[in-house]
Image (cartoon, rainbow, N blue to C red; front, top):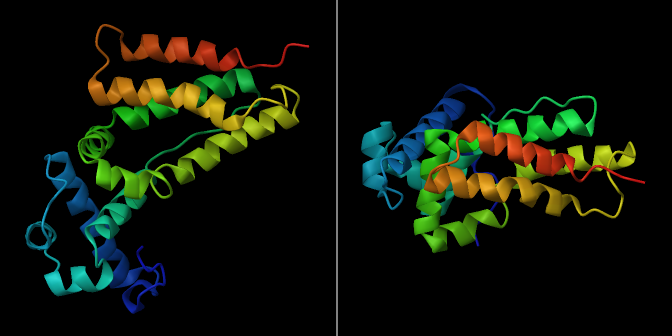
Length: 196
């Protein structure tokens, strides 16, 4: 298990440390997009311009590098909350569809699918947790507002929406267009609405 204690180079917000982190994360994502999830530290040093010594000191394992890249990448996910579950259902589906269709995200998911060891190390905690927490909070708010039944498991609602999108974007939309899938999943998400 990786030591999560901040290293000295990670303590200063902004400045050179932030620049290096962003540069390394961007380079890792580019390597993954090219199909190279098993990149070496030498390859990353050449791609990022950051010396191998610095890379090893701040990110001592390969998984640490993938984590920081995904952390930066996940910041691109945005979702504007609406006033009710009916509108939020479509907003959630549409935001996820756009995010999961991004070439970087597709490459990450394909790489993790092809590398179960990396997937096992990431999926349980870091990879989806911030996004899942946001989606869960929207489901819980809808329950508190009486729009969704209290006995519905928020995780079930989320997975009902996310799973088809991950499969469709990772493997390709096939005969169904992205817009058609968004429409159908929005209807499915709305079907969770409370009916007395």
